Image (cartoon, rainbow, N blue to C red; front, top):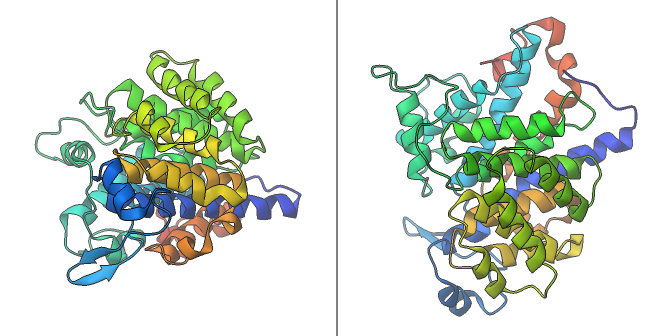
Amino acid sequence: MVSRPADRQMLEAYGSRVRGSLLGGAIGDALGGPVEFWDLDRIHRGCGREGVREYVPEDVGGTIAYGRITDDTQMTLFTVEGMIRASVRTDRGLGFTVAVLHHAYDRWLDTQLLPRPDGERDSWLITERWLYSRRAPGNTCLDALKVARDGERRIRPFGGAARNQSKGCGGVMRSAPFGLLPPWTWASLQSQFDAAAEAAGYTHGHRTGQLASGALAVLIGAIMRGQDLAEAVDTMLEQLRQYEHHEGTTHAIEQAVDAAREPASAAAIEELGDGWVAEEALGIAVYAALAYPEPSEICDALALAVTHSGDSDSTGAICGNILGALHGETALPPVLAFEVEGRGTILTLADDFIYEFTAGDRLHGDYGPDTRWGIRYPGW
């Protein structure tokens, strides 16, 4: 499962990109969360003509809070945790299976239904009390996960596809971690695409919602392989076109590429859609990243990605995932990075992801399931 590169510099760059992608996604999410239901005029009145460039304060029980994440980051963290546990499962001879992710999302569901940890789960992440907070989770995700855990009706087992026809952005906004697997391991771009699409399908039954999720994984996977952003977008489109029913997602991305050839504007984003559905959310995020692709422009890109009348937290999160992977952790705006909610948990989980996929054989491997690492990340 693990194949370490000989080049230490390559390994360090990889770690910075993983941390950058997960933290960048959280920053974009937190920038967009408070304005998710604001129209563009209200954003301009409240935040200025340059858009959302700093965290909008929120009143939380009489206390002013800044940088609060939403369900986008919550579910992304459980994607990471599920991927680690799937990898541990492989060293137990059980094989890597994306279905482990379905159980991870079921643990996230607990954070939405319970007031606090109940001690019944075996994950360290599920004990993080700050995650027990509803942050406008999508009804599609909630309903699909509730159906899957219904032991009496058994409408579908864990690992089965949702039977709805939703192509909402709740699948793509949590799919970036699939692209973060080390490029020197077993993971190919096609396998990353397929894994992300399958995992999105646990909650979103429409093929477009699944394909957009796979496309994001390939975009980030191509970046992790050293491609620049424009090359990675081309690679994403090339991979995407190999699947049936790709046309809607392909069209949204091609629109974004065309729009990025002109000066950046919030009006251009309004033409790309509002981001509530998967292909539009991905297209808006890609547009903002292409409009401001340089490391010094990350704040400009994130502001562009969230300054519109639609699903600002999801488009901001995806844009942050992309640019964080492209430029690494140190390029992120420090004034936003230090204040984002859950930074300690996010970076701990990022580091654990790096450990598992670069040195997992030294954490468990022949030592079996009873190591402290195996207890922290059981393989199911």
